Image 1 (cartoon, one colour):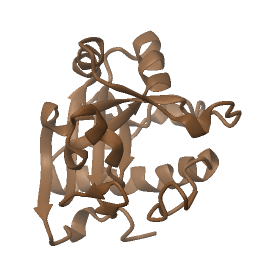
Image 2 (cartoon, rainbow, N blue to C red):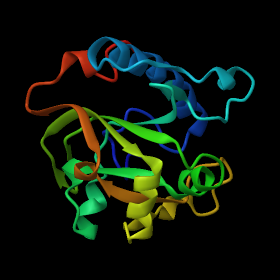
Image 3 (cartoon, one colour):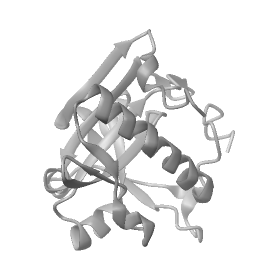
Length: 191
């Protein structure tokens, strides 16, 4: 993996590790929502019986959390600013279209890596929200789709492609830009 990006905290192909890591982050996200954003957030009670249901309920709405701490530096190949671009897996798009079209999607972004061999972006930390119906409309209107060449033949359940979305199309709930890190949102503060 180092040949692709030695700034990643863990192997991006180790889906099991990332799922466990995501569960820890869900609890930190809930705390930020409840204490800083005046949102009523909690773990989806249906997760106790089915780990595949969406992660959260926020203000009474079914919600899913996506966490990104590494910019998708290659988004510049699609004429998108890597510092303001997030990825959304095709498999999640297809699943939500079928099962959860009314869900809200939250992105918790903190660029813990701001440079790579593909370029540099300014530091960014924030929490962003978009109704899935709006997100789906962006995809259907032609959001670029990046195929992961290194995942061809993957049998671990990793996404084979992702759509590239502009954070500027999301509702900004909290955002910090520039050089100073926002301590209260640091993804790795308690890990």
